[in-house]
Length: 241
Image (cartoon, rainbow, N blue to C red; front, side, top):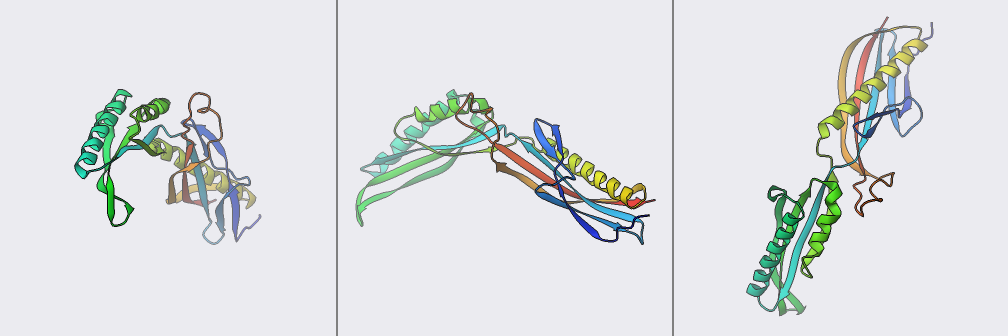
């Protein structure tokens, strides 16, 4: 019988395809690592499994707004409000629902060419739009630009609307990875894998942007959502028999 009374570190990356993403949990070489411990005294084996799922975001957050500069504060504020109403109308016309529009900036202040002499007044109003149809992203951005010289585009961000499916797939992959490791080391130790003694979730890495590896969006739009990855680590203790 082979005895393994020490901790062994491995890298992990196995690929499972689900939900249009890539779930990974492999006992081959990779960027992650997992620990496997065989306890001869208690006839147990403890493994840490890793599961990753990469998926393409399906929601875009667009930060836009308007900005004007006028000789008086009242004129600047009034014209900014008019431009903001025009921006809202343009976004509604591009298919954005009223519930997906939120004002996130409203400012008014003096502009100095030679302090403390006031040269005019600047007024701005910002708006965040939630674009739930990624394929319409270019249309929405073009609608903002068409508002006129007062329009401002302040950036975009992306998210996966339903993270529950992503997390479930990552947990499934982490458990399969842990079981594969346990079976391998039990076999090397000359034992068989028994029942599960305990399972604990070591940690979850929330979705984070990574480089998009394909040209799927480039063929039909100038905006690419990239990918986001969720990672799950679980610790599983098995009996050996």
